[in-house]
Length: 257
Image 1 (cartoon, rainbow, N blue to C red):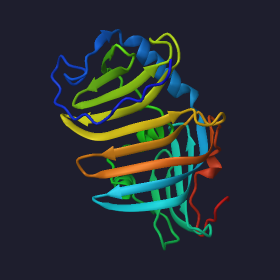
Image 2 (cartoon, helix red, strand yellow):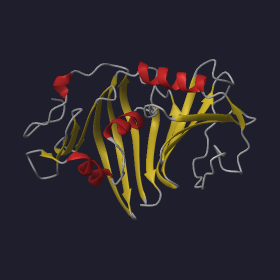
Image 3 (spheres, rainbow, N blue to C red):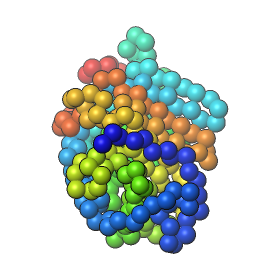
């Protein structure tokens, strides 16, 4: 079945009995098979090495980084480095599974900044592990004890709805076989805290390169804060293990080291 991209521009107030806005007619289906497929999809991802063009829009201002290296070790470690036109390092971000470190433009020493530092850099309120998931075209881990529901439209666009306390994820999928018995494509996800939409991600198109298995473009935004991050992958090796030694920031680090 041809993959259908699902529109993500829907802000809504959810009642306890709804898993979608009233303008989307869904037939509720068992959630367990979908949860199993999404969990299996995450388990298959071991890491990636990629080069991308990154655009950050914040409150009407746009910054473009033409050359950005992205390294991931599963959903446990993340390193992002930006370079100038001559290969000079501009910035570096590292999450080593415990600490968040940043080397800002013009500085040589990285600073330990914590979760707040990630939010300062991107403008997005997102945990490092969830950012790893989004950048690789995956979805965050299913929270333990989460209430799960699922529903599909007549043209086989589906929503998997996960709730735990005031945290609510809506995962947008397209099953390639029409149901959860086969492969599925993930086209995006939305994160709500209470009734506030705090993060919207979209992936398009999936599987652009035979050795990548990644979306060609990943977009993440916070509509309320007017922040948008777009990552356009130009080269990528996905589902490759990246050794621990890559996840460091050293003084005067050069591209390719």
